[in-house]
Length: 184
Image (tube, rainbow, N blue to C red; front, side, top):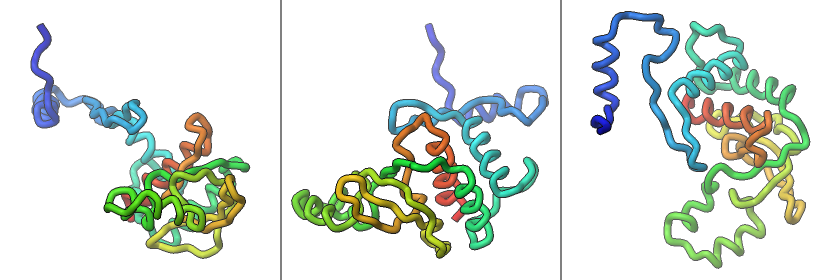
């Protein structure tokens, strides 16, 4: 019969009891379920932080810097050199104007009407390029063209993800959003 599953505190106690070993590898993995049913382990997060650090010009011992104008410029330069265009993108979650309609009780009909004139997280876009302005609150801004009606918008890159989850662009945009949200 299987034993009782160990919680996070139990794993920490177990790690303290075990003899000291090389700490470069985690002694256990924490599994985070993703929205698509896949899981991300603690070591996956470490790898993501290493990729972000490399983009920002750090060695593995340095702390990842906070979002500020200089780090945004560095990240933008990297993405401009490494994103493969054309890049088809969509929203990660509802845009700020949509919250009222998605979770706050606004009507579906009104949301559908406004989606014709405003960008929506439900739409698919083509990434056209980066805006020259850097905005610490919103991060990197990008010009996009909605595929359904060819309308152009400027959106925060941290709100967007590549539609092709197996592409290099998906990981690049995911790493940027992770950094922007967690080090802002």
